[in-house]
Image (cartoon, rainbow, N blue to C red):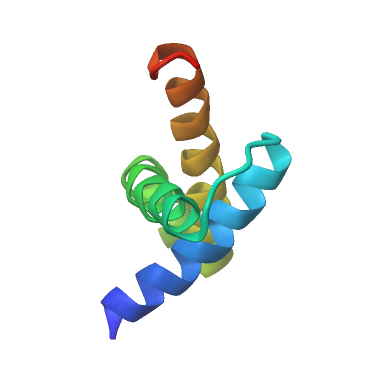
Length: 79
């Protein structure tokens, strides 16, 4: 069950992050960005999650996905 929840939250976070960062990706990349962002954000914001509840985890997932997109744009392959 936690894996399914991670995919659902990751897909939503990736979708929001790619729209905020104006990045056009396919579905698999969007979900991947969201899942990795959720993992990054979850690690960084674990204390915040304990204090404020599940919404902080979602905010952390979106922020983590945005950081991942920024890193990709800065250090990823050039077109």
